[in-house]
Image (cartoon, rainbow, N blue to C red; front, side, top):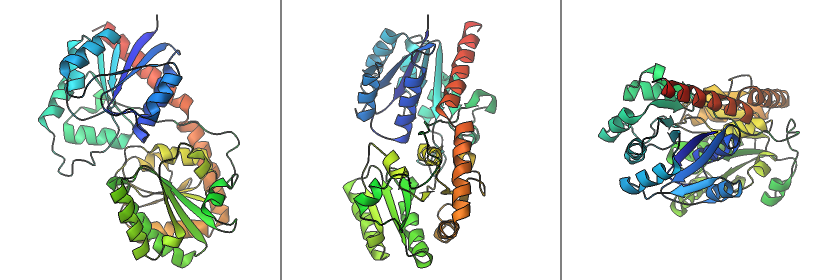
Length: 370
């Protein structure tokens, strides 16, 4: 009989964490596991795709301990794996429901906590947790240093992403260029990330202003979920920097592969990062990368081999890295090829499934002998 896994996340909208859960759930379901996904807040496209893939999706109201316990008890999981970090209701409900193994996943480096102060509810969560997972060594280190979780209790499970066939060459698809009205001679830089403060689009726009001084034949395209206020503010910044004719701030897209396939260079300007799906997806598409050295980025991008790293918030360094790469076709190609090979060997979907399968099997074996 397959082991039953129940994943929990607050919402099923588009986002890096939600996409990670989707891939993991779909990949493990039927491969020795019976996987269900639970959520408490917003429904979204991820939920639709999970249902289409034949997975059970259940909802319990946020902060309603009794409803959560009842839903978890009915699902009867062998492992409850929470991919959120908000309060202790989900873990308390799982414990009350008698789940043998309770695990939590660390997906960030506490960008929401500038004072690095552990809350009472975090202590409560940690007392209820049997196993900790982290998407990167950077996230694991923060969990250990700030929350006091011993390193031996944290397992790093890097994310994996699918690699499209034949993605070894750049400029294979001109659809995004046609959509933006760009000619083949324009070098296209792209950033795929929701417009949140930690993604630091502000520094990217200022860096791009400096890049244009060196490479006037460039265009920057960004896409992701944004509030109307954020989009208006960034548009105003682009006008202030006199780059608005060279910048496209797009919304969320279901086919980000169409964006990646038209790029010459992928950039990632985040100030804080657990481990970025979009960085891996860019590498899977054979793209060279310029990223900040924040959080887990150096675990994905090998500096000087698959791309270049710059200090977070440093517009000048980021601009120099972008302009330097765009002026060197040989390095662009070499970094792109090396990045794709690195993604395939370290961060493929298959590698991720292997890591999680081993983790769950070991957790169940330890619980059985406890």
